[in-house]
Image 1 (cartoon, rainbow, N blue to C red):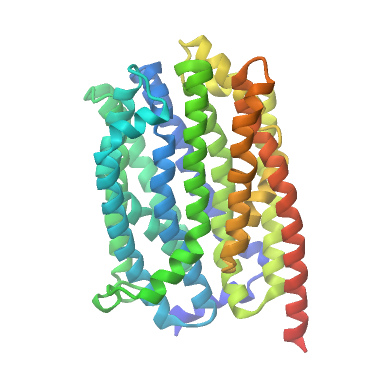
Image 2: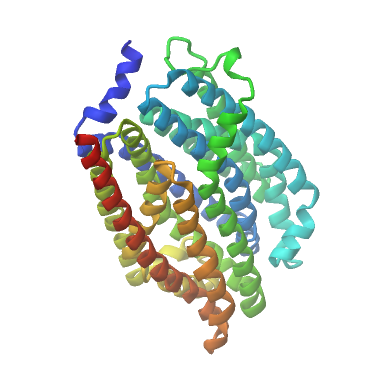
Length: 457
C-alpha cells in the first residue's frame, strides 16, 4: 500500500537528508514557538509592567508540571508509534493514536481541576509576594482552564511527527504561534485584559489548531487515522506509552521541583527583582534548548524506526549527526549569552534597569557550559527513542536531582551575593551531567555495533 510504503524511507533514505527533512520542520516550529514565548514576555512586560513579568516567572514550575504529564503521554506514545511502525505492526499503531486522545483528555482534565483548586497556596509556596501573586494567579487560572486543549494539542502534534508528517506538525505550531501573535497584543493592549489576555491568546490559538489536527486525523484516506474502534482504552498500550514517556515526565517534573527551589531561593536572597531576572533568563535559555528539542523531535522517529527494524548502523549515524548539530546550536547560544547578554534581556523591561542588570548577569553565567549541553540533551532523547526508559530516566534524574538540586542548596553559601550561587548551579550541573551522558552514550554505541554484527552473521 502507498500509505505503508511512505514509512520505508525511514530505513532507506540517506540519513543526512532524512534528518534534515524531519528535523528542520521541528526546529522551525520549536524556534517559532520559542520566539512567541519571548515576544509574549515582551508584550506582558511592556503592556502590563515589571511586576507582571515577575509574576509570570512564578508560573514556571506549574507550567513545567503540566508539561510533564502532557509529555509523558505525547512523547511516550509517539516513540512507541515509531517503534511499532518500524516493526510493521500497523494495527497497534492505529490503536496508539486513539489511546493518546483518551489519555490526554483524562489527564488534562484531572490535572487542570486539581491545580485550579489549590492555585493560591501553590503560588504562595513558590515565593509569590503581595505584588506578584495577583498576576501569577490571573495568568494560571486561564491556562489551567484550557489544560485539556493544551494536552491534546501537543499530544497530536507528536503523533503527526511519528506518522511521517513532520511538515504538518510544523504548520500546526506555526498556526498556533501566528494566532497567538495576533491575539495577544489585541487582548493586552486593545481589550485591556492584562496578563490574562496573554493566557487567553495561548488557549484560543491552541484550540484553533487542535480542531485542525482532529480533522487531519479523522481522514479515513490516511493509513493511521482516528476511528471509533481505536477510541477504546488499551491497558497494554497505555502502560507502554507511559513507561517510555516516563523519562520526559521526570525531566519536566524535576524541572518543576528545581524551578520551585530557584524561585524560592531568588525570592529569599534577592526579592522580586531576582525572581523576575530568573524568569527573563530562563525564557532566553529555553529558546536555545527548544531548538535542540526540535532537532531531537526530528531524530526520534528515525531512531525509533531503525531500532525497531534492526538497522543499528543507521541508528548510530543519525544520533551522531544530531549531536553535531545540537552542539553547534548550544555553542551559538553560549556565544550570544556571554558576549551580548544585556541587549537580549533589555527588550523585556527597558524601564527597569535593576531588573535588566540582574537578568543579564544571570544569563551570562547560565550559558557557560552550553557548548557541551547539546550532547547531553540528545543523549537523553536517544535512549528514550529506542525504548530504553531506564537509562533515559537515569540521565534525566541525575542532571536535575543528583547535581542541580544539591548545588542550589550548597553554592549560595559560598558567594558574597547568594544569588550568584543560584546562577552558578546551572553550569556546574551541566558539566557533570554531560560527562555522565558521554560515558553512557559511548557504551551504548558499542552494544549497538555488537548487535549489528550478530544480526549480519
